[in-house]
Image 1 (tube, rainbow, N blue to C red):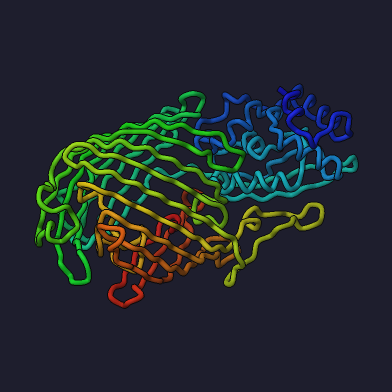
Image 2 (image 1 turned 90 degrees about the vertical axis):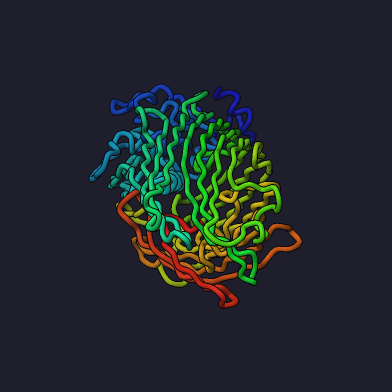
Length: 511
């Protein structure tokens, strides 16, 4: 295996000092077995669930024996440039939470005797912190006379909270309030369990709920299988255009789904590209409280029935690379979904979501550190190495055709797409939108965020006859002591033409 890796790496030439150094390093790492080491199968399932990207890096975690070609190149370059040290001692000076010191040092790839490269350590620490393994992390490095280093670590970790608030908004029913339960460590394996339950502040006798189970252990974690069932209610006021023709609608969808996912490989720190195929069987019920839904132009005229059964088949794709789960400041995320529905609702649909996060100068708070402060024994905090401001851009497309169920139509307005309009301002089968947001950190501890945004979209029944919606607004968030970075706050939006405005709560990331 090592021979094939070296053949692939032209930069590491046979016979060079760097190659010899790496060969010695790999032999030492593969043969050494530190007393405090644990086996791969001993790594807790909760850590494997949170850090699936690390699995292939920690095949033999006690010695870091599983090295990629990029690792070998990095070690060789560091040796030639005199930037490589070996770790004489690692001390966890202080820690709180469920993550044990032995496992923390393996995640950071700094067990005793391992090589230490400053830039590599910072990169791995950022990746672990951004995935909420650590809720705080600081370190000091001490150099010994023989050139080796001692590392002092301070960190805290916490188990993810299982209960999550789940609010949403509609005009007819008022606020829908719910709670979601997630158990990512179901059955002590790489499986997940999720369920939610909620009620409306109006029509409280009619709750909504969902249940899903996902098994990610298939084929060594490369594939996944999931089952889900849900009963969802939707209340909204529908408008055709500025003429103000209105129909007040209430719908319910009962659904059972099955999906199978194919997960691709990805370098450390990236989200692996994944494909999924699935099918769902559903029953759709609709009730018109007031108005004429066929006359509103939002559903096909004539033979359309608001109640019936359907089978939806779909294909999904997603990939991404972000510096943080919540409010990322750097990276990208792409996803697409194509579906075909049979039965009483013969229709087809395509959804696309493209997101990009571009780091920029912070005009209101601390700047990002790009280099370690020189000096032996200086304490460093991982939070200082994250970007503190960015321009976030999102492009959306939701295009459907045929007898689309009311509850599956795109609803323009609110946090989902055009924040300057209330949630149920417009409903249709086609939506194209673009959003831009400047977000920045306000304090050194990264607990407070502020953002300004401009949301824009086109919605309608035909691509050549779509209505334009444009808005702007401001908002802010503050950090809660759960999930290692979950934020909650609010925003206020205003339509450009002044015809509407909205406000809402912001949970996690805006987009």
